[in-house]
Length: 240
Ligand SMILES: NC(=O)c1ccc[n+]([C@@H]2O[C@H](COP(=O)([O-])OP(=O)(O)OC[C@H]3O[C@@H](n4cnc5c(N)ncnc54)[C@H](OP(=O)(O)O)[C@@H]3O)[C@@H](O)[C@H]2O)c1
Image (cartoon, rainbow, N blue to C red; front, side):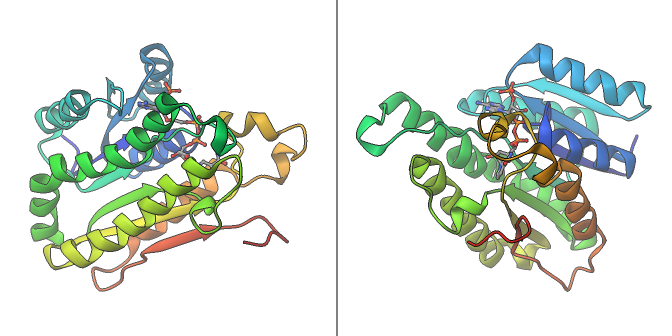
């Protein structure tokens, strides 16, 4: 049984997969959750073949029941939660006049509502870890669009700004319990999510998923006396 354990959502691809690999290589038991079962299964099998202790739970972050199942399967398998990574996210571009209600709701549900539900469902486990070592860590993947709302991605930007505000509130509410939260705000990262822009921004000019994982590794190593509420990842020369 690993000494410490983590949940990573959106772990089948991109930033979440890089974070899951980093945590597993640091000795964490990792529950990997994502929507499409085959893609998740392939990602989890890759980490298992590398010798890591991972558990996969296919789950749609729009579903309260699925979120509860992720947490209960994690509890059953590992019995503790030291790091929660709320990373699953979806961006659907459209001018505001063409907003489709279904697409509005998906972005609100996956990018924001799911994070609130994960805190609620994980609170008991996080409090236990916080009481033990004062370094229970929650990382919420926001976006640089939280800092400067983007046209065509207005709903996405609003949900990600909500993630930053919710993270701030969680620090005020839960720091006394040894639970520390950080919002990650990256510019373009080379993942499938940015395929739509790779005609005009070369993948090699984008932030790497590993860059994000490196910052989480640093967060894990901080003393309980230090909180980093948010991290902005910019590309060289880019303005907010
Ligand atoms: N790439 C960027 O430039 C960038 C910049 C700023 C912030 N971000 C944020 O970073 C996070 C990770 O994105 P990424 O770039 O790594 O993209 P990605 O490679 O496309 O990965 C997205 C992950 O989220 C999962 N996911 C999406 N919708 C889901 C749902 N309804 N239920 C469960 N899982 C779901 C995906 O699983 P399926 O494939 O099965 O749906 C996948 O595992 C997102 O929150 C995104 O908003 C990305």
